[in-house]
Picture (cartoon, helix red, strand yellow):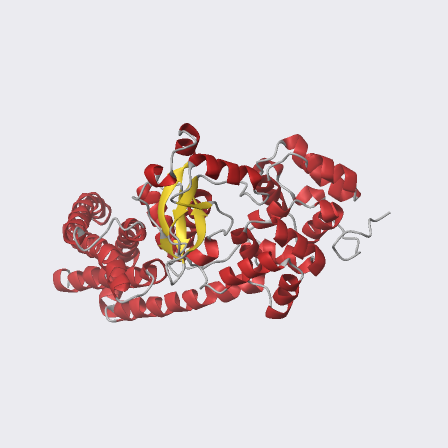
Length: 469
């Protein structure tokens, strides 16, 4: 009999366990099989026993592999015993699918059990009406904390911070601080530092837990705290926060509001998650696929990819117009039609290599105004050397294959020109886009491809027209 206390709709989903690839999961094979078997048999007790003691992130990986009916079956069977942290570990598209199916009362319980940053993650993309219903079901203190975080811009430090922290005034002793922490019922599950604040609740220093535990009880926090700490504005972009954590090896850092008062704290796990997301986003955008997920529908993916394919079509038309200017040359020397794609392809690959390095260097702030000229010069020389090597190889092969040394020379020179230009385009295009405020990862590939195709075809066919006719 179905447990009617479950927070999901009472519909019996049809679930085929064979669609799950157990080898792609972090769970052991036995655990994964136990979960899958429990879902197929609609066995609530078996499911809860299988996930007991497993890390929420591993269970989330399994949920992301399941189709929609499998995810609904999982959450329905787990019912009120669904671990809240699993929802916080889900990728965005899957999270929204699961959250949409939960009843407001149960969702409010889940949100209340999570850290502020994880609660914001669950609520931020909901419709305003439902979001307010969930917030209204929360205790006042939790509701106010979450609402304040939701007021900050998307992808900001204020959204990623958690409000559960430990702060104390500078005149307190170590003994008072330890006693306070022992007496608190709402002590954060994980924290690394105590934030020392002034009477206006502005952070003035931090003390690591190790130093607190090693100090005598009468010692004051003022004498132990480190004033060399980094704080972040709540409106600061999250990528800047992630960069600072990685650059300065931070473990945690306070977040301040517009008045300079302590608003929350960011810990290293949240910062590294953002860093991972930013890296993945750059990689996806370099391929012109935006922010799509594997769980997106055919229509959603088509909408995201179509605009950039249309742009690529436009650039391909430009390249074809260059070729059309030399149709007479191609008609007289058919070999040009065979060889010109080699020049464009090699230039495209060379440009992509440089572009990948440049976009990543810009994202990590390793490529700056100070070293830009040196990096541009280096990439240009690399393009020249690579072009020269392949010019000798392909020029010689063309000479031998077509018994025409002039054709081999034309191909070789065109390859040197295009690989040199491609290398320069791969570094200059993303730098230029960043200067004008555009996203280098999103737009660079289209421009670099256009440059390499146009220059490659024009150089090869133009040289052929001059030398061979």
